[in-house]
Length: 314
Image 1 (cartoon, helix red, strand yellow):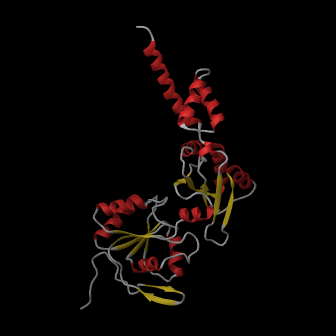
Image 2 (cartoon, rainbow, N blue to C red):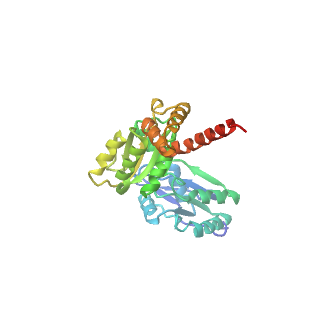
Image 3 (cartoon, one colour):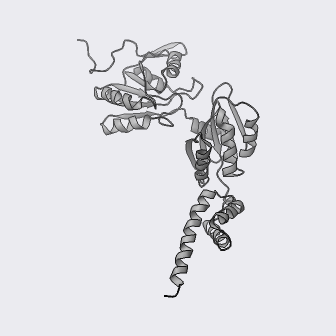
């Protein structure tokens, strides 16, 4: 008697992948959502487990079917594809959840690297978990970790901050927020915007070491290291292409004054000049972001006014 699959699942004749000329048959994977890391450039950076999962799934949800199709063609995988990205996530997610409810095995991939990093995948994972479906992660390539390993900068603590805002004012405001962080920073950037971003990073973060990691694992992989201002100047003189990861060193302990020292500088400045001028004066002296100093100066000014009022005769 022929065994039938649950409704909504695929009974495909070909569940296999081809590796180094050898065809490898696989079985249908367990129902649920499988988060599969895929190569960030070099298609050889795929795990055997990922290949078996992609071949054994009923459906693969991906950002761009054209991009994922190149990977599947490389390994002769015939699993159907369906798009799942920022622009269709709201309408596609219920359909995927319905398939999961019918017992389907769905693999989720991004265009490159580990899903859920700068893509809408986390909403699908959350919804699948809330609906009681099994969610499994298959680790693999990651642009963030790859860049960290070649940057030559501290890796004990790092903050992945995604893409900076494209507009100048918002970008500079975000950099001012990041200036407070004491960990190594990891950012994604595009070729057309990288020069402007590096210039703003140099202005907002000061003379920090950084690494510009371009086209990681690909034929034209390039790693540039230097101060932020030096990298900004180098990128300003020519067209930069490809996908870029910026890794920026944390501030040195000696470069950042203690909160007590900063408060003392602000109090002395506030006793002589306006709040705006005090912030500007201390910003020049310490290199700290004006936005951060402004918020602290407001608090100190209120404390000073309160103490003055309490000491006034009644």
